[in-house]
Image (cartoon, rainbow, N blue to C red; front, side, top):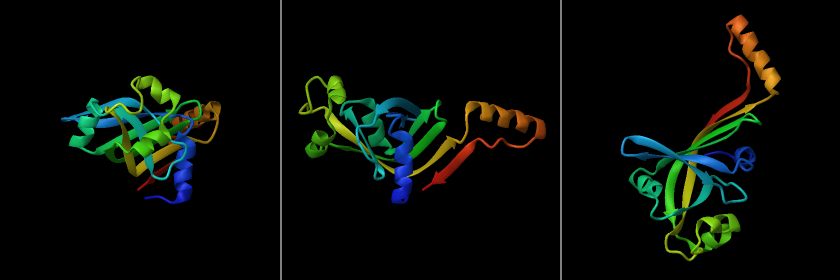
Length: 160
């Protein structure tokens, strides 16, 4: 879906944010909840620990199309990623991504039968990155209001 360079660009935008809002569909209603990245690199797939019994798992099994959004207002970074969710109990991957932060949420350990990984294969997305300071952004907004032109707030790109 995107080049290795573009995947690295996306990773550089989200890796320090760490927590994205995962959107699934519950019947006809979209639902979002925070999810914490567990990987150290991005190749087009994002990984999250969850409980097999979690509602988001049932929702993703009913409709595997999901969306993740990441934002860092201080840095002016906003990323929306859409893809397909899949559940895995692959013990090698669980061992690879397990850490003390994850362990705090799963007191019975990584052998708990309810511990699974949610794999999200990204198919498309969009990202925004403000190119300047907040003061410059305010200037752009004021200028746009006086000239009836759209403010230039920075980079925006769709992919997939």
